[in-house]
Image 1 (tube, rainbow, N blue to C red):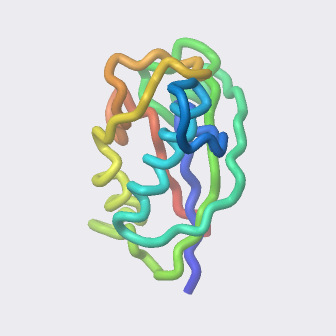
Image 2: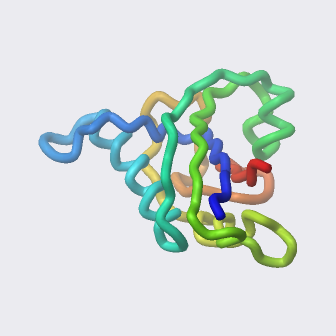
Length: 138
């Protein structure tokens, strides 16, 4: 049975299609995107939809991400994905627990087109520094 999920992050994960060549911001954006896909793929093979970018209000940031980022509007990269297996990320009655566990403290490249400033260039899935969130879509 197909299961749908949504990933939202303050990290620039724009898929640029730049896979090699000289060091550039487009290569770094692609690298962050690849990190995201490869990390999800540790648990299952995802089928992704297009990534959207939106700017959300400080209040909405505080409701969705860590309080560290809630002082101003932030750019958010989001996409939906599906899996072929039901509840592949389920643990302790949390439908995305295993995703949160494998993403916590995975490094990324910062300083691209993000509006958020990161103390550490790693994904945080809980606490005041939360910069990536997952939801199961019913």
